Image (tube, rainbow, N blue to C red; front, side, top):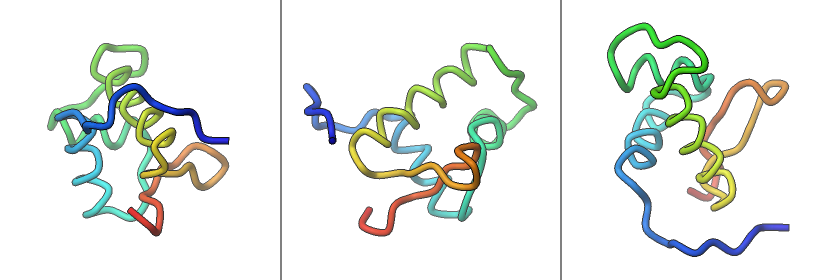
Length: 79
């Protein structure tokens, strides 16, 4: 069951995450954060949390899906 979302617009970070997933097949949230900020990102930081929030929102919208034991993320076939 897909939740009905209040907002239909994709944010800047969400768009950047989708662009990164266009270039790479499957990545972890940490890998995406490392690429997005061009430095080593630790878990439980604001940058990591931002990427994870973006991925969860994109998953609710059906644009990304979890793969590989729910650790890796990839774009869905229809997006």
